[in-house]
Image 1 (cartoon, rainbow, N blue to C red):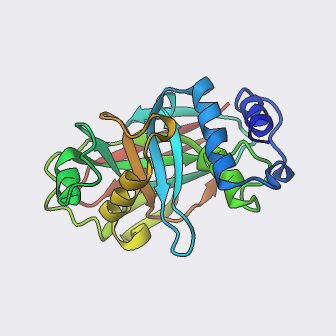
Image 2: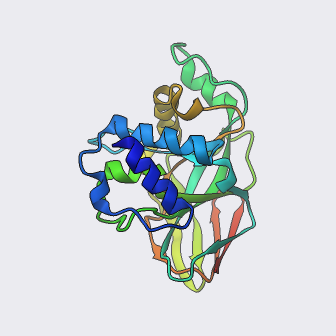
Length: 246
């Protein structure tokens, strides 16, 4: 099944028909990770990962391809009739080899090995109905990641409290966030630690230079292309993304 599903998702990535939700029936967690590996072999290299830690479910991990990672400001072309999601997030970039996960001071060593960035994630699905899709099917589809736009990094981020966030996000004339925001999991760095302990060698492991995004600060609004997106997380820089309608 993973081989067949990977083939369908690859065709959809190349402009083919979107994958029906029924294609995920019987998919296991191991199968979803195998699909990710198969797709990364064709569409990689991997430039980062997205992670989520649901309270009553296993950790969610999905690769982000290097070709889908951009510096702000960025202009992305989207089919005119496709709805896409926009999320503003805390991101971390690994600057040196990952510390030994077995070290007693792993968390403090990891904190020193990363820099903090603001990020915009563009959410795009290769599956027909991502809202109703099985979570494992979405994870197989790289957790419906479409692109990531990164702002300027903050190397010394000790003064930034990533257990909370505030900022502003606007899409065209619509304000998506203005003020305080809930940090997914309650602590972006704790989420990062859980990812670092779980990733292992999956899709090549977490390598220096790669980024990890840690979850939306503004929910998941679905928008039509033809918009300018502007965001800022307090304490970090600004973000700009233009969504052109192809």
